[in-house]
Length: 262
Image: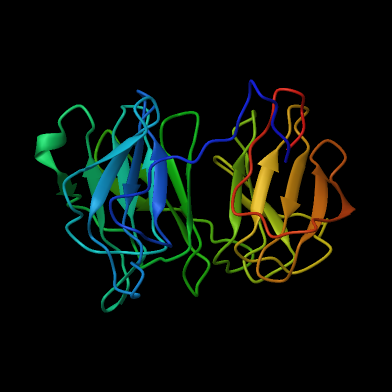
């Protein structure tokens, strides 16, 4: 990476609590809510904090009711954040809790309705109708929908075609969701009202804990993961996978630049 004299790469302030396996959720006002994870000693973290990119400062927020790692924290259409599942002190969790940035003094409020099963390393995808699709992260390969209006979880009548954990979930413009990898090289598509369909295309390698990045022309880059630094390109229009070489390093994050490069 190079930087000109007018555009320098600058380090940001550190977190109040060093952690890994946490979540970082962009809020409606541009701040970032950071929840859970494990600290440098491997202990579960209940503490949450909010990072402000404008001031480059991190301030403590209310703590989670249940310390958790490998959970999801999703910004809903109403501006609240749903924290769901993950691994706690006694194993995988089915519980969830809600945070409202507009009323931070209320802290994290337990959701009365629990998920139908405990999940960790699952995905949570906000659909266009406001429901949240929660998929995988369990041995059965189940899925469910969260309704923010009622605060309830509803198991879908359709299971995943392949049980997945550590997979990716990408929402397309037609409201379909592509699930990829998760101890597998397979992919499948969720269509609202129709369920999950196994995709005939397969990634070039088994991927878990990888990245999925949608380009401006709807192509999808699937890269890295626990098995290495290879890259696959998925074209949803043709339904084909094309290997695209590999990275020379292991990336910890990715962003789409204005010039279309990642």
